Amino acid sequence: MTVFATFIGKLAQLLSPAKAKGDHLLQTYIGLVPNPLSKRSQQLQPRIHDAQTYRSVCPYCAVGCGQRIYVQDGRVIDIEGDSDSPVSGGCLCPKGAASFELVVNPNRWTTVKYRAPYATDWEEKPLDWAMDRIAQLVYETREATFQEKNKEGKPLNNTLAIGSLGGATLDNEENYLITKLFHSLGMVCIENQARI
Image (tube, rainbow, N blue to C red):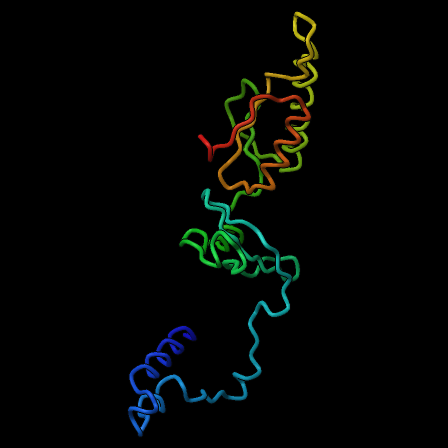
């Protein structure tokens, strides 16, 4: 509404400049008159006024639009575009603008679906269990397949048994950390979905 009122005010200035028209009819009645506020309106504050603000990246596509996430009492209360983002300048597409509904949706899965080897049914496991399991399997696979030297005795220090395919929503900092970690483990097969 503020943008519209500002636009009308600017249009009124162009249509009825002070020197051209003595009555200033448009300037008097469109956009330039101070809007009187009721006492109740003067005391209103936005619901995010005392919330903590966290900066993040939209979880959907490879563009990486900036988002501001407002948290109050340990709950996300709003997500909006980050006007300081050099990527999006505060704009979000319809999916990004609906990120709040992704976070607070009661139908959102908060567990991991796991199917044990040779099993036919899926079971739900907590996220912490899944992270521990992935870390343990990466460690075991690296230990079992790590090659220090090739047949000629030249140093290799790698494993070809583990690979990484990053997602398009990872930002540069996350990709940098992933690459540093996986290279330090000796992984060679590191790729990003956004590059393919």
